Length: 104
Image (cartoon, rainbow, N blue to C red; front, top):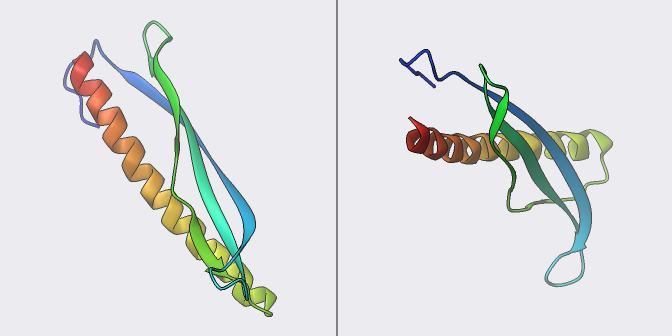
């Protein structure tokens, strides 16, 4: 963020956590891995250390099929985590942008 007013400087603390569970496909023949991302965040005013806003964002689950190959399975989960991280970052950016516009 670019803020020209130096009296209002904020710190954003964020953590992302991934949770994977197994689910059955619609036909019930295949096991799928459902992965969600949860981002916990705090927006803090730097000069007063007051928490302006805190909360969490949970992404929609991403599904991947399981494979017999450990390498393929790990690569699939890694790719899903990258997509979820990007999606979560976009959501967090939009939310923080709205909060900052209300404050400044």
